Image (tube, one colour):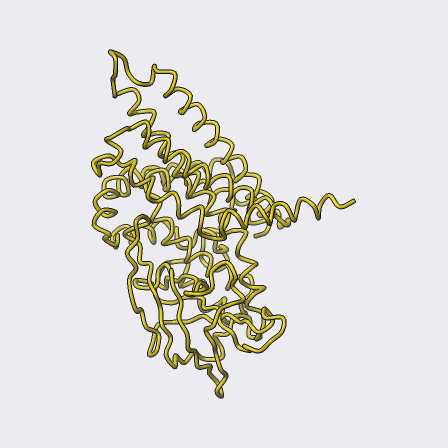
Length: 389
């Protein structure tokens, strides 16, 4: 994303947008969060409202009908929504990662066709990377695409794919040359629209991140036109995937920070309502120590996200910064959710209190978009490389 795009958003424009998002969260998101989460019910009405708000085009360039938001504003939106209910952010985040890859690496024909439709939400997408035996080690994928004339035939399976049931397409990572060495040279990505051989095999039951269509996919002799090979050249898939990880990690960091902030808000309110030994528990030093630690970690997380987002918006390399933000903010989300459970005490296990949902949702952020163990390795390697002696 260029600095020119960033300059189009003044402080006044940004605040007006965030105020609109806040109003929508209060009116439409907060009232249904508990019900839809517990019932694992997909929020169709919310999706329609997301279209009207332009969220499906949030980071798509204005040239293609999107809002053209810089990562710094986009992250603030994600934090705000996640502070009330994290799950809906996955609906437009997975979609925008796909759109970002098309805008960054697609052919001109692919950009002109798909991006305007994605910006309005008329076509909604996701990312098909993970397989039953390949998560962090993406080079171990087994899904294969074989060229047959003017199309490819794809066979294989994917798992943990968001937007796969109610969406229209996914950006599918495959091997076009399974024997290539090194392995990454044989990987390609396809814009895979639903059709014969594209099978949504199973909607997965999850402890958290409910109400969102996370599914297992099977591809059986699925035919895709050669024109949908991302970028039009085989062997670029691994590079194209890595190119989207920085924005993806900034997003997940924002979701972690949002969970942390939401858990903090609930805890501060409850600590003033709940009384023991004749006073609100907020007056007990043990609770104050927890709240002080939680609040400090939330603010630190936001600063790390801001740092990574600004570097991304400038076009600078920011894998270390994005890794730091993702690692720290998501661990903060898990920490604040757990501390919130302790503050709520026995009531934290009642579904009448929303803190239990924050606790269920938090751990996924530590695992998804590259585990936090992997983030620490990335941080360390970049730290050494940038300070080589």
